[in-house]
Image (tube, rainbow, N blue to C red; front, side, top):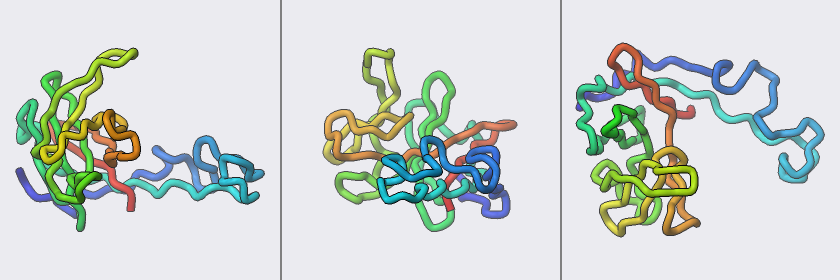
Length: 159
């Protein structure tokens, strides 16, 4: 696994969050419940910075790999169908940086099978698409958008 190359970071603000001045999806200009009921709009999501983390061929299907992005750690997972997911490497339940060593699998839902990773420490199971913990709803694993271009894995993280 190669280290992150900082000079390949690219900001992607308007494509992800709209033009400057737009409110975030679901927010209202008038305030109300979407803005926390305080009469002012909710904060805009932070723009993403895209990082070229590795080549897709560096990732083995069914296994996780850890990588540094700036001062943070992420876990990358390549599934058997070739899709790649990125999450925080830090386990929400324990704070240990172990998620790349989690057990990759899937769970059946009403909408079909979803890709999951189970923490290697206490086996909490998280959806790779949303970070939702399936056996401890109070926990959530941060997930990051991924795109694969020309064989390179790019991960978007908030500034």
